[in-house]
Length: 177
Length: 170
Image (cartoon, rainbow over all chains, first blue to last red; front, side):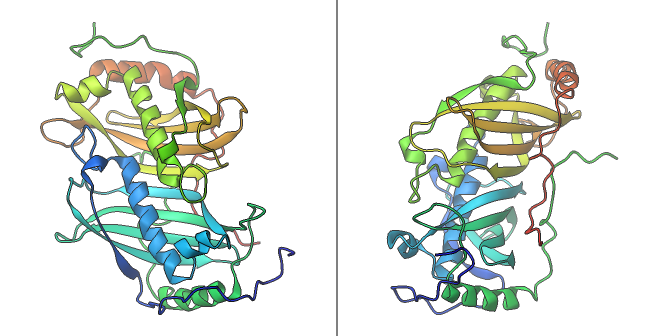
């Protein structure tokens, strides 16, 4: 199928009722003991792993969760990610994640996740990512299906009312006084 | 003489630092049949350990309860997929540093085929073990950073450094 044609086929499984809460506030996790490193806190690499599950919760909302992969309909690849490490976490800490859709086009998602300590409420970390839809057969980029694009449009409208997060759009550097 | 109570490996003046090697492990592979986004960062974190060992702020530094290094911020670009068993070569370039911090970028290559697989740009901060707060680098670490940074500064700035995430509209 040419890259420009929209795939009109429905998904071969039921989709969850779309949650238009902005930001999306569904994903919960706990810091596993094996995520703790020799500094006695959650290792920096494991934040990325934890955020990947929050990204999965967003993907499920738009019809592209595990069943999308298992049905070999396509997948998404992360092209780029930016993490801020705002506070340490210990083993067993309960986590709450929120996800804001910052932008999207026919093939890409620009997401912003925040990770909070679920009980104490403090911000532990943020992750901003650029995600590309990939065709299962060609392993090259391809547009989201119409049904996914429709869900994204609804979420974009709801999330577009939120302010731009202060920790989004950052570049890395040592600030000079 | 250094101010650290253990031997430190000789300073490698190669630019970029080119000491770290690894192999993509089976448990790093996800549903998509390639190394998962999180495990690229695991692999880069081990390259950070190799980097820190050059400056005497690796395992011994924390094990002896002198200090730690924390990552404050990280940016990753995922440039190409890698599969189970692929050999990796990770280089590290210092971009900037001050009394407490280092700004560097790692580049991960397929060690045989040579292609760039990913980059990881970081801000590392020195942390005092007792207070768990930012503190100046040990004198020997600072001396080594001051030696190596001007050599790395002769390299061009990698195009993956200093990026902001956005969908660029045509």
